[in-house]
Image (cartoon, rainbow, N blue to C red; front, side):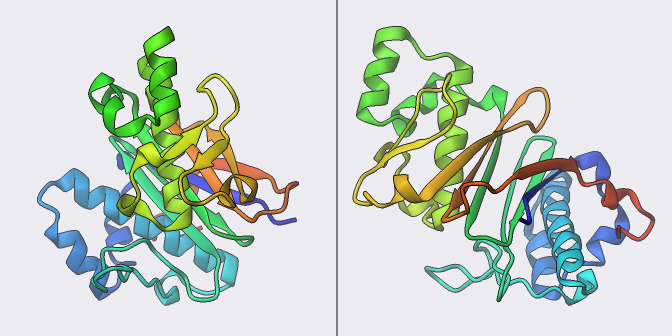
Amino acid sequence: MEPVAVWWATLADVRPAHEALLDSVERGRRERYLRDADRDRFTLGAAITRIAVGTALGISPEHVRIDRACDDCGKPHGRPVIDGGPHVSVSHSGDRVGVAISAHGPVGLDVEEAGRANESIAGHLLAPAEKADAAAAGMSPDALLAYWTRKEAALKATGDGLRVGLTRLSMSAPADPPRLVGWEGRPDLPGRMAMRRLEPGPGYGACLAMIDHPAAVDVTEAPAYFLRGPAGRP
């Protein structure tokens, strides 16, 4: 069974050749970012997607067609979609960029820099039962990071994104393996969604959510080594 692949990169991996892989829509979006680091994060996410999907489909990265149309407005700032598959999800935070690719069903990847998880986000993040646990036992930054990455990954897998508040989702306790416990208005999702804790490197937390995947599917993580080639190819 083909595994779900998660590729990790850092901003040091970006090369001039990666920008050449972007199509005209992606180049336009890249140029709208004001900071070099933001442009590099977007470039890496697009390059990893194109190279990895192209390898899986047996075509060159330049010929991978990615639809980024927003579900709400149609503008090209939505999640990446490959017509006919595979399913992909892109996430970045700080120095890390990750891309998840699955042939089995929708996936959602989220990575967050640990320093961003603090008590100021708790009110927008925790469901009522999770807030009660936090009030009773305290909530460490690591616990908040676990809740945050799990919920963002779940919302990316369904495609809901910012349209659904994080407080509508309930997750397993941070010390336990990640699991969707409840989703307000969507009682079917806990039984359909599997989650995995990922290892993006020191100072970061990450989670992967998978919908309607085979129970025995493996998840592999690896550095996007192919990005360091002179032409940005495997």
